[in-house]
Amino acid sequence: MNKTRNTAAISTTLAIVLTLAAGSALAGTTGTEFQTMYTTLLNWVNGYLGKSIAIAAFILGAGIGIARSSPIPALAGVVFALFMVYVPTIIDSIMTAVV
Image (cartoon, rainbow, N blue to C red):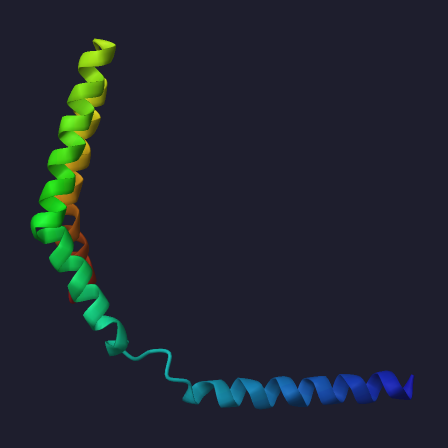
């Protein structure tokens, strides 16, 4: 029983020390090391790569729609193309909004 109390005391002390040490963590910084990756991906989506993917999605959806005699795949291609064009701007606006 005495060994159980020692283990509990050590565990409690360790938990308190770790909790107090967590205050100096740098997890709340902006993460500038990912800024180049973010800029590259944003340039790809907003540039010719994103436009090419959007056009390819529309053409693929239209082709599948013609093959199946259904407008739904073409509409899916249009929706995907719209997402490729507008979603990066929406996400950037959400992430940079000041409340």
